[in-house]
Length: 125
Image 1 (cartoon, rainbow, N blue to C red):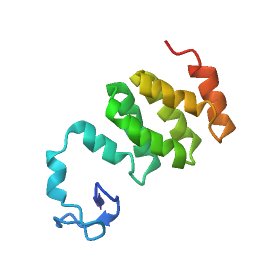
Image 2: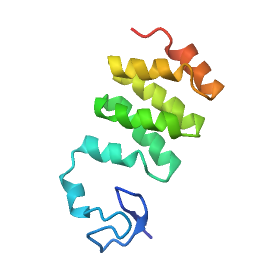
Image 3: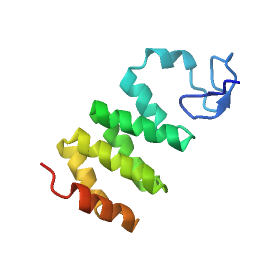
Image 4: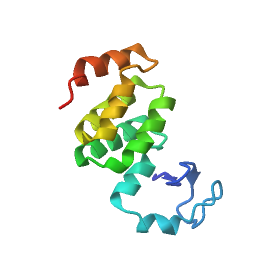
């Protein structure tokens, strides 16, 4: 059975609704979003493995627009694997803003993340 989520608030919804009953998002707007914007919305997906895949794709595509969302995720995320994937994506994006975020990760509250960034991304070109 297929399970549907609102792409804005990620609550479970029926496949027949047009407006999300939780956040009032008009689902018809979703189709007009760019691929990049859809991926950025997906960074809030409730399934960790899907979020990790989305971060990986954003890094491969070097979508700079995701850096703002990554900044929020770095502050709120509790899963070190997700945080490491964000570090990899930022390294792939490799612009000044991404480098600043990596530098910020070097002093992350989780020592494993700070160490990971220090060991793998300290010398950015």
